[in-house]
Length: 158
Length: 264
View 1 (cartoon, each protein chain N blue to C red):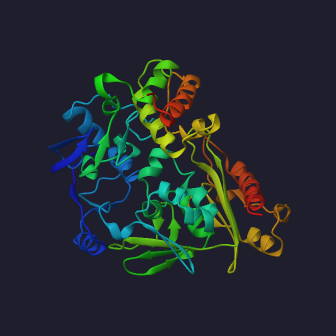
View 2: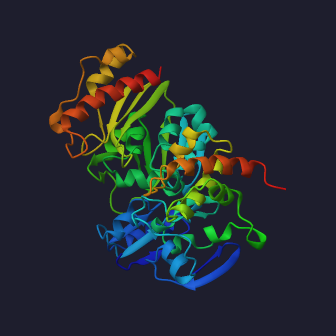
View 3: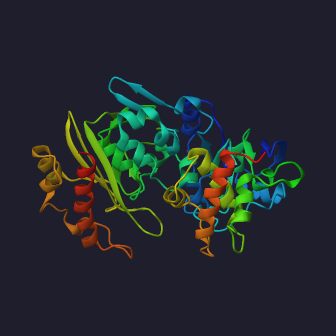
C-alpha cells in the first residue's frame, strides 16, 4: 500500500505492507532510529512519538493508520544548528538518563505531558509518566528533568 | 503479525458494507488491544476495517438527556472534555485513568466496549451509569450489552456508533490497581440517579457485573456504612497470581465504600 505523511516537517511517501507497524516504518524505511523498540507490546513507551500533536506508542499503531498524519520523532525536536529542545536540554542538564535507551520515548512523552500540564507537580509527573519504563530505574533525575523542562518550555531561552 | 487486507472507509454505511462482505473481518478502532493481539497472533483477521477516518463516529455531544460520546472518541478527549467534567465528573476521571497517556491518546470508547476485556474500565462506566450503546442497527441497554468474557451482544455486521450516558445525581469510580500493570484488580462505579442506584464492578470476574445487595442498601441510605457486612461471594470471582478470589471479594466492598464516599 502507498502511504504518505509528514515526518519532522518533511513529506514522505512509501510503499508498505498493511501490517507494517509505524515504528518499523520510521526505523527501517525512514532510517530514523532514534525511536526505539523496547518491549514491542505497548507497555514500555520507548517507541513514543507524536502523531498530530499527541504522544502515541508507535509499536501499537499501523503505518497505514498514520496516512496523512503529522509525525514528530526525537530527530525532529532539535532546532537550528543542533540547538536542543528545552526538554532535551533539561534531560542533559539533570542527567535524566543512564543507559539512554528509554530517553527518546521519555522526552517525547514528557513534552506531551507538559503540553497538557504546563506546570506539573512532581506527583503529576510521576503519575503521568506511567507509560514510560526506565529499566535502569533512573526515575529520580528523569522527574527532575521533566520539571525543569516544563519551566524551560514555559519561558524559552532568548 | 499475519498479513491482512486493509480498508479505510469514510462512513459508517461504507464500513457496514465492507463488514457485510463476510470473511474473517475485524474492525480497527484505536487498536490498543487489537494490534497488540494481532502481533501475538491471538487475533489474525484476513480483513481489517479501520474506523479511524470516519468523522461521524467522533465527538462529544451534550443534550437534555445527558452526554453522547462518539464510538471513536479517544479516552483523552473524554477525560479533558469540559462538558463531561461538568456533567459526569466520574466518567471524565475514569477515562483519564485508563492505561497511560499514550494509550489514552489512541484508545476509543467503542473499541473498549466491543472488546469487553474483563479488566477494562469503560464497561463499569456504561453499566454503572446505565448508559445506552447505539449501533448502526439498534440501541442496546447497558444491562443487555455485556454478555461474558470478551463477549457482547453485538452481532455480525454491527458497529457501535455512540454511547449515551444519562447524568447521574452523584457517581464515582474507584479502582485498586495492580501495582505493576496498573490494570484494575477491582474497579467499582457507584452511581445514584433518577432511575435508581447502581454498583458495577470490573476486574474481579470474567465480565463486569452489578451488585444488587449493595444497590438496595445504598438506595435506602447513600453512605459507605450502608455497605457494612455486604460482600460478593468469592466463588464467582477471578483468582490469579495477583489476587485471590477472596481478596477480590474483600476489595469490592472496600472500593464500593470509597466510591460512595467520593460521590457524596
